[in-house]
Image 1 (tube, rainbow, N blue to C red):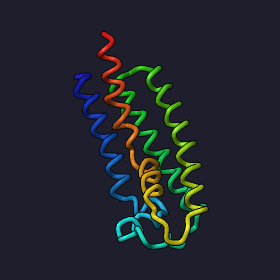
Image 2: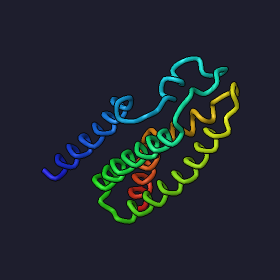
Image 3: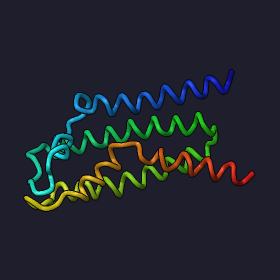
Image 4: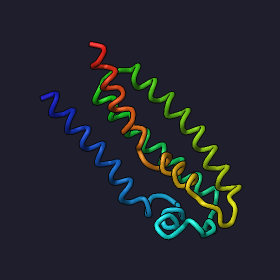
Length: 144
């Protein structure tokens, strides 16, 4: 029964991640969502409110991080893993958010926006969960 509840909890939390993605247009201010859907390689960045964009990206990262940490907790029930994950999330957020902000404020009119695309992608998607989950699983069960 415990295992079924754990699986059910992970499914619900993963569904929350999907819902954040599904309703990203409604929940967060991000003019770059539509910008990167078109042929953005030769176009200048759209006019945007940089503070609102940064706030939306930070909020989305925070929501994804909380849900990701909850998934890691349900899967491993290990405080050390959660502490390490929290440190990694904090460090990576600091580096990536500074890079994101720097790119937003210094981007040239028609330069390639590949770096912005990928830095933003790591901030708004729960990619770290996809990296940490198998890494911790391998580390935990390989050491047995």
